[in-house]
Length: 621
Image (tube, rainbow, N blue to C red; front, top):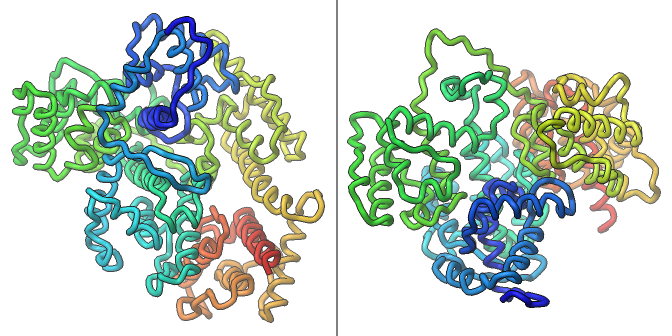
C-alpha cells in the first residue's frame, strides 16, 4: 500500500523472484538488459504501460550503482520492492508464482541457502542427455534418466555423464582415457572426475566459479542445472555462425555488411532466422524474443512448416486450435515429425520460458537451417583462430558480462577489459572514469575514451603496450588487441601464483621454469626443459612427467607414446597431458595443438597452472 515506510519480501518470494529473473537472463550472465525490464516485471505479474517502463528504465540508469547499463538480481529486487512500496503488487506476484507449479524449493550448495529449481529444466536436460548419449557404451548403465524424478541429480554425481556431455557439446575437449570409470564409490576417484569436468567446462567458456566437488558429489540441484545449461547452451550455439552456415548472409538487412552480421550474438541471429522464415511463409508477424512473442505457438507453427522437408508431412493444422496449450501440443507433434521435439513442453511454450525456448529454436536451426547461400553471392568469411577462441573462452569463464561472442567487436567499448582488470587486481579500476551507458550522439568518442583508459591501466600494471592506443582497441586492430588480451590472461594466471607466494613479488617466467626443472629433478626424471620453446615439449612428455611428479601414480603410462615417431603420436600425448593436467586440478585453457606446435605463451600458462597445483599439494602435505 502507498505510504508504507518499508517493505520486506519473504524468503520464498525472494527465491521465486530470483527464479523469474533467471528465466529472463537467458545467457546466464547474472544480469538483464534495460530493455528487458518490462518483460521481467510482467513475468512477476506486474504489467505497466510502456511509458512507465521507459520512466523506470531512465531512473534505473541514473541510480545504476555499478554503471553497467544493466540490472543484476540485487538491483531488480530493489526495484521490485520500490514498486511494491508504491502499489501493492504482492498479491499479484503471489498469484503469478502460484501458477508456476514446476518450481521446487531446494536447500544445498556451499552456502546452504534455499534455491528455486524448475522441474521443466530438469525434465528438458534429462531428456536431452538421454537422447544424445544413448549410444555411448559408458553411459548405458546410467540411461535412461527418469526425467520425472530427481534421478538426474543422482546420475551425474560421479562425473561420467558430465564429461561425456562436454564432449558432446564440444568434441574432443576431454581425452576419455582420463575419465575414471570404475570403483567410483571411492571419493578421490569422483573428485578427479569432478576436477576434469569443471576445468574442462572452464576451457570451453563455462563460468563455474560457485560450484565445486562437494556440490557435484551431493548432486545439488540448482548448481547441477546451472552447469548443465551452460554446457548444453555452448553446444547448441557453437555452430550458429557464418563459418558453419554461409547461408546466414540471407539474414542481412538493407545497408548491412557481413561484419554487421558477425557482430550479432547467436541469440540475435536465431531471432533473425525465425523472422526470415516467417516472412518467406508470408506469416503476418515477427518476433523479438523467445518468451512473450512465441507463447501462442503461431510463429513456431509457421516456422516448422517452412523449414521442414516437404515429405515430412508437417502442416499448419495447429493454427486451427483455439486453446493455447492444445495449440502448443499440436505444434510440438509437428516438430516430432522431424525429430525436433526437444527441451520444451506445451506448458513451457505457453509460459514463455525463454531459456528452454531458446534451446528449442537452436536445435531446430542446427537440424533444419533451410538457408542456401545464393551461388552468385561471394562471401569472405574470416574464421575465428584457435588463439582467439582460447581467449574468448577464458574471458567467458571469468564470468564477464555480457557474454563475449566475437572478440574484437565485443571489446570495443572497453567494459569487458575493465572487468578483467578488476578480477586480476581488485580495486585497480577507477569506475568513476568509466562510461558504462553510452550516449547515442557521443558513443564512439566515449568508447574510445574507455579503451584509452584500458590501455593506461595496462601500462600502470607494467604491460608492454608500446604504440598501442585506445582507438586501436576500438577499431579491433588484431595484433594489438590480441597482445593486450594475452597480457591480461598471463597476468591472471600469474596472479593466482602470486597470491600463494610468501611475498608479493611478481612471478617471472624464469622462476616458473626453474620450478619445473627442480620438480622434475626431485621426481628423478631424466628430462628437463631449457625454455618454453624447447622442441622436446612437442612430444608432450615433459608435461606428462611433471604431472607424474606432482601427482604420483596418476599417469597411466600405457596410454603414453614414450618414443613418439609422428605428429599423430605427439598429438595423442598432448591430448592426454591436457586432460590429465585438468584432472589433477590445473585450470588449463591451452589446447593440445599448442603443445605440439610449441606455442611458448600457452606452454607457459600450462606450467604456471601445474605449479599452482604443485604448491597447493605441497602445502597440504
